[in-house]
Image 1 (cartoon, rainbow, N blue to C red):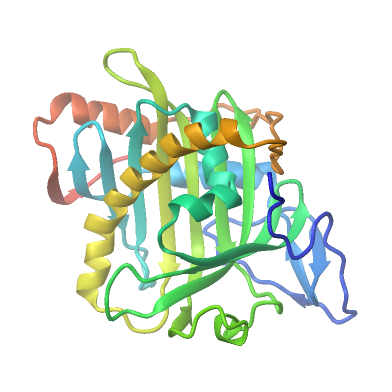
Image 2 (image 1 turned 135 degrees about the horizontal axis):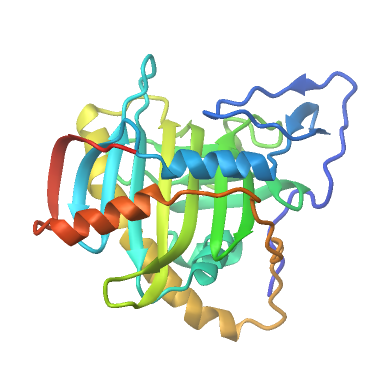
Amino acid sequence: MPSHKNGSNGGAAGDSKDDTVVTYQTPFPITGPEVQHGGRTYRLATKQDCLSFRNFADSLDGFVLQYNRKNEVITWNKKISGEPMRVIKVFGVFPDIQPQTLYDMLQDAIFREVWDNFRIDAFRIVKLDENNDIGYYAAKSPVPGVANRDFVNQRAWINAGNDEYVIFNTSVPHRDVPLDYLKAKKISSDSVVRAISKITGYLVRPWTDENGKKGSCLTYITQCDPAGWIPTPVTNFISTKFAPNTIRTVEEAAKQFKEWLPKQKDYVKDWPETADPYGVPVQHLTIEFAKEKWGSDGDSGKQKKGKTSKG
């Protein structure tokens, strides 16, 4: 398999005596050791931080149910006091996809070129350690008249055991990708706005349906500042229409990945396969909510407004 596109690999070495300390915008602290790269000081996300993300993604506290498609997908949003950006949360189930397959597909940067129709460019800038990197991602706008967006994100991941996996990111600065990166590299001449991911990530877990069939489920959660100008109807579209459809896109991609993977010679995963359990009990609030909702609600494919979930 071709190697992943990396700006650097291995530990991140500092190249400036006057490092600027990066400030993180995550809803929980990043608690790992400091590392230097590109004239800045970053902090590594730890297993505890992945657990903090996991609990954040699984919580239902304050979330308002927006959309429910029975036995397929549920979306919520949550308003944070004093912040213009809502948290969008999507839960979907994949009866024919095992959790490890889904996780590997989401991790694989080469295969992403196959399934991500919004991707303009994406690459790893530096691998900070075995569970952290910094990467660049530029995406086409899903809505005509709205400029494309790009992100520079620090990403962390963990195999928590028991078929549970976490991947999350948060935006950080990096000197290798200035605001005019796409134009300077002649990759795209279209207008692009540097957006900010306060927190975005995936929680992959096993799922067993009412007939006992085993598959996987995905909780996707994001709080992003798209920057620039985006009209309110577009924001509503993303939370109620685009987000649920993304779950179906991921499901189709995972099915393709199952067929694609055996054809790859010398395939190497550059993410750890050894499980590193949290070591503490965890809840499954979103899964429990979905099972209860779908077991009692005869409506499907309808938008639900004004209901606040209790976690």
